[in-house]
Length: 102
Length: 179
Image (tube, rainbow over all chains, first blue to last red; front, side, top):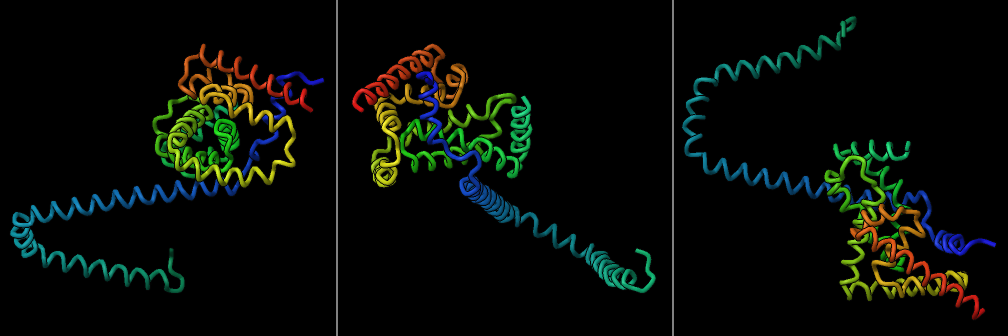
């Protein structure tokens, strides 16, 4: 004869959810991931708006500086870009060549 | 002990942003949380909805969970607050009730008299008492764990459990007497 508490416990146990329920866990994680995506999107939007506003405010100051800098740095920047392109093109060919050491 | 340390390592990983660790926590605790909410609100569809919302809230608040705290009790605490909030939303309750009744009618024949008597008796208990009974009698929570989860003083939990147990047993005896 089971005790009253055992009877109660057995009755409560009869409607327990399964110990593992993949559809339920998947539904939860789907909502968690959606929430995470929305939060990241909101954060990136705030950053983009703040960045745009900062640029708009600072543009009168930044513009003359950038113009001056670009005149001085244009040859060096051109050479740097060419060097990078050459490195990518030649590097690719050299590594693709037969017997190349990788 | 091993299970607790596994929980701690999963919580630590989830606090660092690991969705995989959180997913394992969901898998490990969904049964306890859903069982508690089913008993606390008596409506399976609503209970599962509340359990999902509880996990969603837990994901947002996982950083606040203290080291060594019981994850199960923490989740049940969040779930209980969600249940109380949902109860206040009468319109939502009514919509869910219709769904619940539809599901319930299908299973009524299969359920034993005892089970129905228990469900009816649970439904008559006040919210706090019902939650204490659901945790301490059905889910093997200690009184102090239930007190921590529900935010109710320890003495009140003990008296709720004693009175709730008495009322449930009376209901079961009455059901047997009728049969």
